[in-house]
Length: 136
Image (cartoon, rainbow, N blue to C red; front, side, top):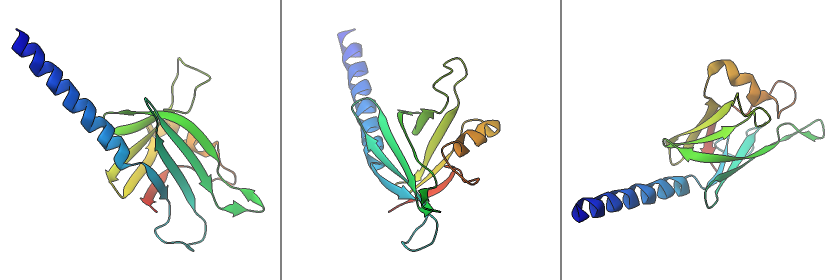
């Protein structure tokens, strides 16, 4: 029995370690452009915290104003970053999902297709936080 408990503790420790390693793979700045000077851009800075992940979105200036601006706290779950965009209503969460494609590329969308317009709220002029982002 003690042997089984030790094996379980070791497995739990390994999975916890790989989880934090996965999160740290994405500690970086990702942008909607691959090279500087591609015109309009959006970027997200991903910063792992102790138990959460801080996300900071920014964009290029349009008509003397930043077009998209947002920051929030997400969680690493199921190999993805989950952030509730509807924090005022705890009964009806709307999740932004950041899905790693590889260490150099992420995809941002909502958990449910019908919630995609929530990604437009922090933006002006019809822009959205949704899309493919590349490590800068």
